[in-house]
Image (cartoon, rainbow, N blue to C red; front, side, top):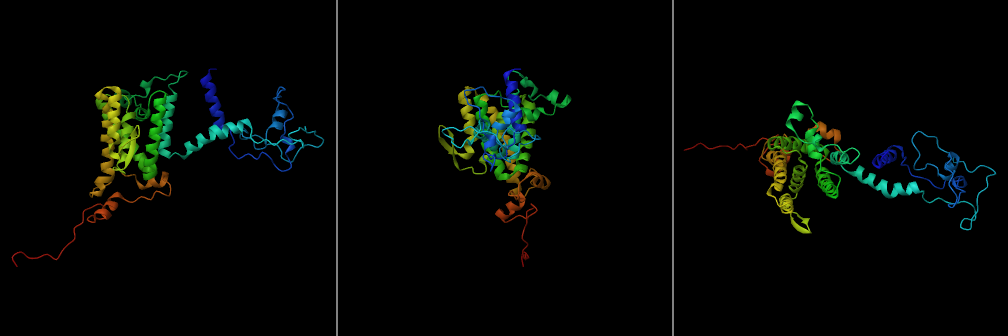
Length: 351
């Protein structure tokens, strides 16, 4: 068995067999039971009886469904080793190696992952999975994720528009930085608008970028989606000053264009700006029909439906129809999105 498969097996064991409940290392009346009498210089006995003696109750690596050891205290007549550092013969285990590894490495990562908003977490998980499939034991051909008209429509491979937008390349430092970048902007947009609106935004980008990709034969649209995400975030506070590169601060609405310029200068090709321009165009399409057009009296047809909001949104996101919000700002529209005119008394001409 090769090394990456061992790592996958280890991660699967940690994800499904670890009991994350807090560990009580010093239960009342049972301290001596969990004390190991084996010195470090001697070989460790890995028999089940020895493992039970060296493991505290509610241990970290207790698999679900297994029987737990009793905490009534040490058996009568059992001798406990006394040392200079521990004259009473009871050695308090502050933290086992497995618990230390979990609390220092795995628990913070899991905490960060679970705190990511729902739709952003799903997108990042798909992007990470596609990058892991490029590792050497599997080495999946990237053409399986590419956007192709014949295979998508005629062969019914409908996953290609989604994988083409989520694929960010091999698992490299550049890919990790891109994932962090998508995490920051996606999290901020979803926290502000809710998971339902974020889902509508992503589905809109999948459709638009797929149509453009089919027309211009672009296999992947991940870079264009990142530009669309930045553009949608920038329209919330367009004149705020944000850092772009080497702590150079520009207005927020200029960030997508600055990223296009940076890619053109790094690649020394003007074609490097095409994905960014695609993303800016599709991002503006969503922003116009989600924010601007309803404020002008039109129907907010790119807004998330109520049943979807009640299904996946949290209680803190209370939505108001965009047309009604626009009417309150403008003062000349009704709550149903139609323009309203106040009737006057009128005056006869020539009278």
